[in-house]
Length: 103
Image 1 (cartoon, rainbow, N blue to C red):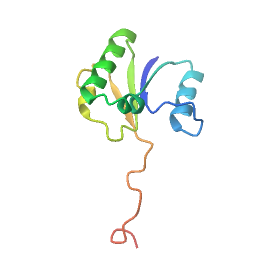
Image 2: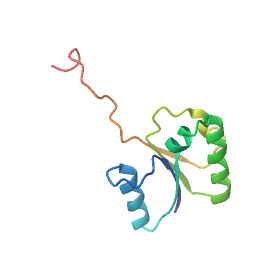
Image 3: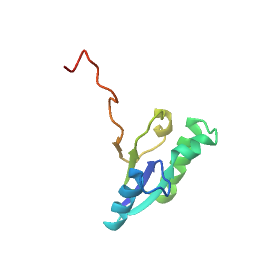
């Protein structure tokens, strides 16, 4: 399977993207990595990131788009995409428990 993997890709082995990408590759999948965080740091607007993702999709023809995290990511980045998107968050939904909800 060919996977367009959108996440925060670095060579730091403590990041979950490193290990998930490695696991996909070890299983024989072809991975195209797109680091949205480094592209966002280049002051690109979300619609331009969407255009880059659309270009990658059209030229690599992935079976799925695997989106990890997506922190502060605008849905605009995905308006042009046609492949199925699987979203997986490795961030906790709630960082601190509230005293009113938990004894």
